[in-house]
Length: 257
Image (cartoon, rainbow, N blue to C red; front, side):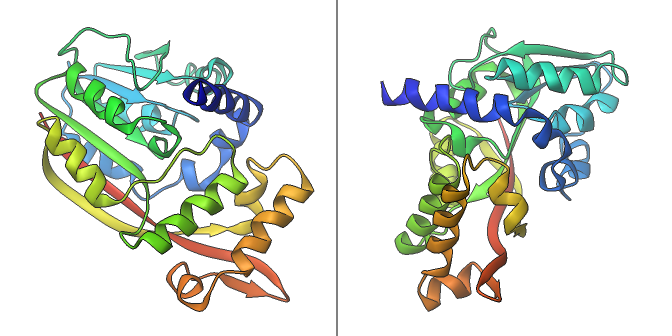
């Protein structure tokens, strides 16, 4: 029941904010996007899967390099909005409503799969990784990109609490060690990875999903109330008593079946 409620919340939050995710600078202009084709080395006949496409930025990055891109999302309104933005430029993208934890595809269907800045919304990341491994062909490559929780419990709790206060559709950011274990458990061998720090502009970030001014105040109160060690780790920048920016960890990893 809780899982169903969270997925309905995901549909609600992303359906109402679909266009924001198309235009969001964090999502649309990340340094990771140009690396996708470079890492995957797609061929003319490659079939690539974009899991939880959101604003369609991964599909846009992959389409010039692949034969076919299958762009999926749980939220119909989000997928319709993404298709509207991409169809004029790309004729090789197919759009499928799909749950990342129960992908509606036959085993060994894809040469590559990518999931970017979405897994923290999945109630059962182990199901997501298992499904991704199932639909990849032998030798197929998978790129995961997401916000990463620190290994220290206190810092991880603070990060996930902050995200949950701001976004009711948030499930949990995992740590690198947790993701590595899931990859290993599903016979996906890590090939390369990249760590980076990502800076959020607080006003833009919080208003992307917050549903009220009171919610915005609660998130800011939580950030301002962090102890010194937490504030230092997340580099919370405060000006005139208001949060301006803060920094989180992001991880990009490629694994092969």
